[in-house]
Amino acid sequence: MNDAYQGPTITSELGRLPIEAAADRNRLSRGTAGEVLDMIDGVSVVELLRDHGSPLFVFSEATLHRKLRHFREAFTSRYKTTSFAWSFKTNRLDAICKIMKDEGWIAEVVSDFEYQKARRLGYEGSQIVYNGPYKSRSSLKMALQEGALIQIDSWDELAVVEDLAEELDGTFDVGMRVWVTTGHAPIWSKFGFSLTNGEAQQAARRIIRHPRFRLHTIHCHVGTYVLDPETYGVATQILLGLRKNLSDDTGRLVPCLNLGGGFPSNSLLHGMIGPAEVVVPPIEDYADAIATELNALPKRDRPLLRLEAGRSLVDEAGYLATTIVAVKGGPRPDAPAESLSSIVVKEQMLLSDTARLSYVLDAGVHLLFTANWFAIQPYPCRRVESLPVPTRLLGCLCMEIDVIRDHVDLPRLQTGDHLTFHPVGAYNFDQSMQFIYLRPAVVLIGTDRKVHQIRRKETLDDIESAEMLPAHLSG
Ligand SMILES: *Cc1c(COP(=O)(O)O)cnc(C)c1O
Image (tube, rainbow, N blue to C red; front, side):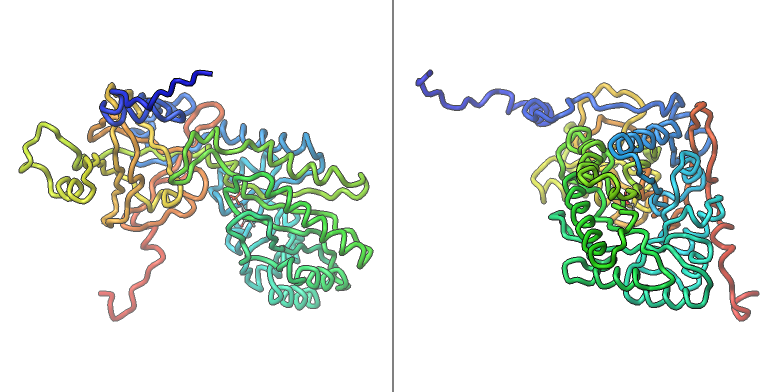
């Protein structure tokens, strides 16, 4: 052993340009030459924006197929009897839902509007799982008549469904949602019946004993972007326990367990240290956690497993290409103090730090709702030979809160440069709104690398067609 103590040395590295020094010290750093994204599936970002306008949502059909097949394979290779449902609320664009349908995904909807959308797309009632805390009576009736699987969420809803069953002829398969404590936080207790206080058992018995119902599914959806696969192992154990109790009690073995969605995509929340491919467990780990529990049962007792994935399938298939419309602030070392803008001076005073360079983009949080939680990565579309500097990305909305990234390292760019955000395929287009700006076009790059417009840019008429002026104000 070397017992000659050597004190820590402070190397000259610490005195170097901060960004370089940080990159040297940070073992998880991706280095200083940021990634560029100039093509999506072989199609140039610049050409896409030239042909369809900026900003632009872009979806990759090839990525979507790859994700769907990978997900399916991960589960069916471990547990054959798995049924896959696509969560419409994650992305309800017709073209996206149709790709899911063509790949054999059934529909998972959470409102009467989504239900109708699924029907219009050609889903039979029997290919629809109907979830959510509020389902209108008329939509519940339609769902029963059309053979959709209603996953009952509350005592009040159970009463309505019982009432409707009396009104209609026949017997009906129904499901019920339960909420469970798996150790995953936060606990989603808003939905379904509590398992711990006995409500779930009570509700299940009431459904099983009802002459017009067959309890087809016990369902739980523990959260979203769940980073611990074991959460699903625990949830499976708990649902199997409930199923066993009910079987001991009533002699009926519930045929289907639905573990919901919530599997993460390769994205990072603010403050997480990446890269995502290292931090986010692969889908195989989730499939293992679930299948291990199910495969421990005797063969004849094994249920149909159903999953309702959203985010993990579509997020990486989606991009938002944008353009820098203005450059603001930023340290200009050669500039005399009196010529610095007030925002730079303020930042330097408050943070006693170099002010960040800011870019104003032609897109904002009205298009990237998930930027509130996720550190969505912006990729320049050309290589710039400069060190990345701390940068802030400001949205185009006339609102101070419209900041897409408060702090991201980017090389120096200029007005007119493009930044493409990825992944943004989940929960962004669907939660986008016409606030201050209308929604941009959406294109799908097909597996043939052809660009298909799947939603046109909105116009003023789209908004105004729903408005009316009362007589005394018109004229
Ligand atoms: C939103 C939702 C899903 C999909 O969730 P992801 O986190 O996108 O996978 C699945 N099931 C239910 C009931 C949902 O509400």
